[in-house]
Structure formats: structure tokens, C-alpha cells
Image (cartoon, rainbow over all chains, first blue to last red):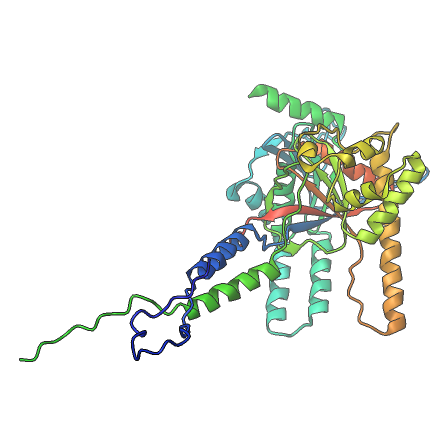
Length: 213
Length: 220
């Protein structure tokens, strides 16, 4: 394949037959072709980025013998997911005909856009977000150390005023919907979120909502 | 007036720098390339803004769009030990060749009783082979056992490596085994939940959910 290119005009100096001097130039074209072929192959096949992940914690199942009291939630939000749609209500679930006369819980709908879920979460979690912003500023100016910063952020997210979110999904919701919600929660600095099973009453409400439209 | 004779440019170009560069790049890409492992199913994970990388040492459950679970372990040593324990438990025999073949699989999704037959297939046959995923129900909780054994073995390997490094006074770099879940965008959340329940049953509560990076700036 690789031929040695000979200089054409150098042959007739004297009559003596000498061994032809091979020229120093080698035709590199095939090599270059091969090199670029390999280059293209590796560029196209290599997967540079390792997959990204999202860390998430799930609650432990309570032991049947233990009597766990539900924690007191001040700023709570329940998100109910179904296929590509998302409903929510704030605070605790109130049944119709509440003895204390509170209005029964109604589901409201939002969506996955910036003005939907994101805005809702940011509004509700304002106190924690502000606090974390102050901390970030401090960390930038090196007033607090990295580890302290992380700890303080955790604390800010864990405060009572910070938003607590319950995620409930029905059997139509997809994994993408769930990840989208968790992603939004992370962006909105919500530290306390947990996925739980839906209550039958909530399911009824959801069915009504879905049936109406 | 003297004639201005244009210099004829030589037709052969000096390609040496170009070749140098090309080979440099080839070498670079060859060394950095990490090939995507063949997977029995295509899973397209949803995007997120998380930029955390997947840890090196993980136990993975992939769930495809129809909800079938697939299982894999990244650490070869732990993988071999886990396989031995599962084979013993289900009284399945594998030849050395089949075991070698098993080590090559990144994830698999078959009943352990089908495993010998599955391992004898060629890659192309495996692609076509209809599997039901690793069985995961209360009557046949193979997925749970795989996870349980894998977790035990991976932790044992981790601790062993840590001890060995301590004895030799070397730097210890291995990461603790993590539990990764990879699911398709279209996977129903309940199928994922079923797998997560399997994990929580054996008291594993922290997961790395694999997503693809959407990029872009953080929403403000």
C-alpha cells in the first residue's frame, strides 16, 4: 500500500548505475486516511459523560409494633401525580363535614412549567430559599467553611417554616413525571419531601377531577 | 521589463503536523473512550438538573418502559460471589464458560433457572430473547435476593479493600457501594415503586436515580 514516492528527475547524473536512493518523503496519505478514520470512530463512539444521578432517600417502613405519631407539619404541601398532570393541596387533608367546620380539601391543578410547579414551590419555600441565599453569599466570601455551609443549608432546609412536600402518585403517573417533580423540589431547595401512598379519599377526589374534564 | 514568473506551488503538502495532530487526537480518544456497555434493553432516562455523577461502585436495577426489572453489579468480585450464592440457593449449575459470560453482562433480566440457557446464547439471540425481567414477587423474590446478596458481598469487598489499604498504608479510594435505579421516562411510577419497596424491605433507603443531564442554567 504505502509506496515510496521517488523523485522523478534525479536519475541521470552520470552513467554509473547506483543503487537508487530512496527519497526521504513517504506518501502519508493512506496513514492520514486511517488516522482520521479512527479519529472519527472514537469521537463518535466515546461516551464522555458518565450518567448523572439524583440522590433520594425513602422513608423506612414503620415497624408494625411501633406506634409512630405523624410529625407536626407547619408548611405542608401534597402533590398528587397522575399521567402528565399534577394536582396539589396545601396543609392537611380535610374531609367534607369537618367537625371544626373547616372547608373540605379541594385539589388544584398546576403544571410542570416554570410558572406552574416551580413558582408554587418557590413561593411556599421562600423563607428557606432566602436563608440559603444569605449562606451562599457568605460561603462565596469565605466567611464560613464549606462543611459548615453544607450543615447550615441542611438546617435551613429542615426548619419548621421550610416547606414539607408529600408526593403521591397514582398508577398512571410515569417515572418522568416523578423525576420532574423531584428535580423541581431540588431546585426550589426543598429539603423535606417524601413519597407516600395515596389515601383513598384523595384518590376519590383525583378521580372526580379527572372525570370532570 | 523582466517577466514576473509566478512561483509554482508544490503540489505535495507537508502533512506532518496534521498527521501529528490526528494521531494525538486518536490516542487521546482511544485512551479516554469508555464504551457503552451493551444493554439488553434500551432505557432512556428522564432529564434532570442534577449534576452529580454516578458513583463507581454501584448495584443497579434498571427498569424498562414496560416495567421489567434488570439487575447488575459494577464490582466484578462482588458480582462473582453474588452469582455463586444465588446458584447455590437455587441449585443451578453453570459451567466456567457460562460464568465468564455472565461476568460480561452489564445487566440481565432473566429468571435464574433460565440463566444457563440465556448465557449460552449469542449477543444477537439475547437481543431477541423475550425475558420477563428478574422475577420480583412475594412467591419468587429473586430480585430481592440478588440485591440482598449483592449488597452484602459488595460491602464485604469494600471493607476488605479498606482493611488491605490500611495494612499497606496506601490511600484508599474505593467508594462505598451505592444503589442505583435507572428507569425509562415512560416507565410507570408504580413499577419503580415496586423495586424501591424491594429495597426498603431489606432496609436500603438511599438511592441514586439515574437521569440524563438536561443542562442549561438553573431556573431562577
